[in-house]
Length: 102
Image (cartoon, rainbow, N blue to C red; front, side):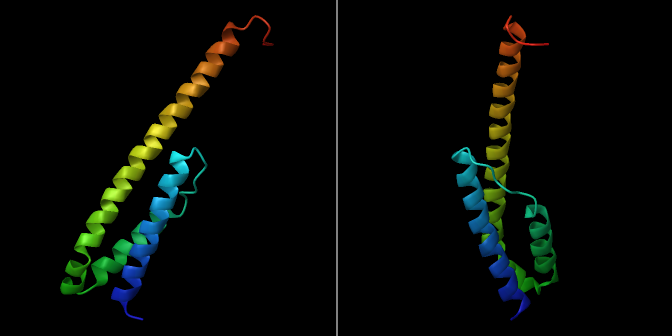
């Protein structure tokens, strides 16, 4: 298989996984993001190793992936903010509860 084909497959798999992760976050489920940075780095390394013409052929797909990653970042930030707020409310409730143990 060629580097171009491998890279396109990496991009397709990454796109599908990001869509799945976004759905999991939207559903309030946990999502595993641990290998995402390594996969993006490997894909970017492959793109930079491609001939200029091949890399240009992936520009639209790459742009779409960047948009999906930006959306994922917003989703994760929103979820984090919601969880943090819920935790702070629980802490406040516990602090105001005369029956809670110290």
